[in-house]
Length: 339
Image (cartoon, rainbow, N blue to C red; front, top):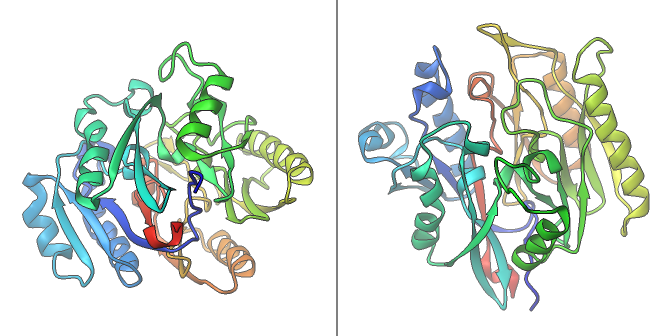
């Protein structure tokens, strides 16, 4: 069977998470993070087993807060931060077997040293999961990749074709690597721009997401005076053009971001695209204490995914770390589904 990276809505065996412990990620607000993260762990574990990486110094805290939650399994593993989407393995199916692609990781282009624990975590995940870890020389974060499960990929050049991540790599060479590692045969390089305040250089999981092979939601900004307006609108126009040309065609739906919010004078990059689909049954949708826009995002996703439970969950504290639920998770597809 050809290699394939399953879509997020396909059957899963577990969701991998990583316990938050780096107070520098949420300056001035870290005490709010473990309780908020606990609610996220519980929301996932109600549907699917959770495999949670925990550094030794935090094991007692994690055991006390989530250790007795049904379907939560704790695994000792040193980490630098909690954003396992970016440093965990990307699981692919090939010949009825699951493999974990271990990308290179350097903390978003060397922004946040040290990162050696995070860079080593994918191998630990694969060891616990009992799957082969396959190393790639490409520096690539999981939040930079979005697939329909049928060989199409959405990504951005700004977080891959950069001297801080992949010096000397051309777009064609990166595309060949995605073909080899993920079975990708079509790539849309979304290049309008990212969110103000985003430190990833434009991860796609903040900008555009497949909800099925024929529908994509795209972050947009309806405030004409917001600096996010034009970059996001450019992404939307590019996706619309591509959606009419690709096969099968893709409908692109507007998913407006919330109004601007700052903490300690810094704009928080918030997008409802940072949702997590759990086993094709529950969609955990970030909420940003934003009232009407939170409700609108829930309605849009409920209309697009009527067979799934839309589960709104507050992410206003977590987002101060410049990420949300998708950034903080990594799904493991059901191996039997690959057969």
